[in-house]
Amino acid sequence: AAGRLSDEERLALEGLALYWQGQQEIADAKVKRDLAKGKHQRLLTDLAAFGRGEVGKPSPVGIGASLKTGYIAPIMIYDKLCSVRIMADNVGERQPERLHALRIANKELRYTLEFFEPLLGPAAYDCIVAIKQVLTHLGDVNDARIHLRMLNQVQDPALVAAVALYRGVVEQQLEGLRESFPMV
Image (tube, rainbow, N blue to C red; front, side):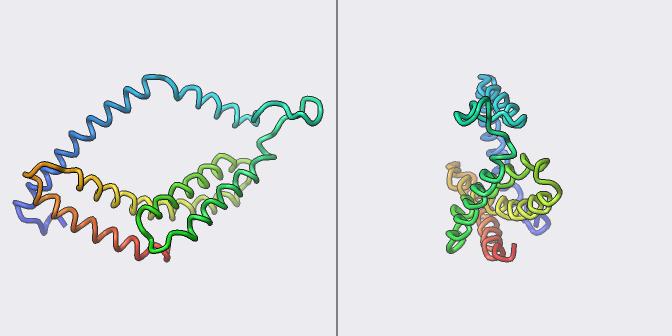
């Protein structure tokens, strides 16, 4: 589409890109400060223990019995699948916010399947591939939703033309994604 832009439109969009680059640098600095706190190390330790099958404390039933990853995998997978199905039944008019909730539920299912893939065997791969296709589409919907939110936050009067131009493109993309979702 860049070839169809006038010089004025191109400059306006470049100004908007520079504005967002500055906002991104501010957000990146905040993330770096948060990661420096080290709280994520405890999560990594817990996940490593979970991967070894060390979940929870010994069961009160039996001597030294503990929960094993293979025993709880089906429960966790079906729990995530249930969440996806509930969200899928409630997308209604395919509003971006509801599609985003469905995206989150699908991500949880995907990550759960990927985590247990060694236990599940090759059949899990096909499920993961299908979920990734849905996630790609829902990710595009979410990107458009976020772009519209970001456009609403731009207060610089010099960027009014760029915001209007980009808003039209994003709204058109979002509508196409919403309409094509049932096919995905």
